[in-house]
Image (tube, rainbow, N blue to C red; front, side, top):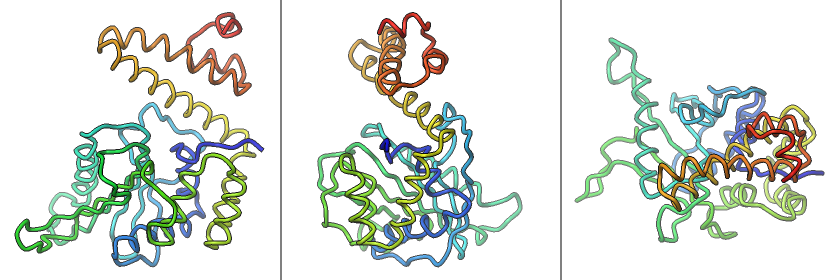
Length: 281
């Protein structure tokens, strides 16, 4: 059976935002709360239901997963594969955007509720060893909390090592960082944590679904192409890099998709290359 990149945001949306994903999503959120010594939640309602067709060209305008808890706390979850040292400002911007939408015109401030931002990063923000960091607003002198309405969690997956976090989060991060021997790792995770049996079923069902895998492949090609273009921009400079990067992006995408035996017409549609050009790669 073919394996997939479990950090692909299309798969994450499927895993956490399908109509019957509430328990899986709740368990993931609570694993983060437990690792931060925070109160856990009893239930969640998904606000971003999963769809087969999503226009991920517009991804920058939406959170990957958004839900609300029984007490009115909003939780937003984002998966980020690339970024830099300015990424915290982006996280704060999206938190603020979601917080500002809670208050309708004419409502009082006591109608506001906490917004929790959870960010899974597949890159390192800095050189410290912290895998899971939780940020809130404190007085710098006496550490007194101003409000619990801002809570930002950053998880840097590349720093993750087994068994150094609380057991529940440790189990989830094993899942999100698995590369080789996925079947063996999933079997071990099912033994560690019962909810992982349902996660394993979702993973297998996703791979067997032709339509979802087609959307997954499109998303992987888009992400891969963006990575190639960013590398070219850094290497050649912005203007020249964009032009060369676009061409290299198309070629690299085509080679990658061709290696996965994707349909040549689909490759041509996604890359802009001709069928003949693709055959000659």
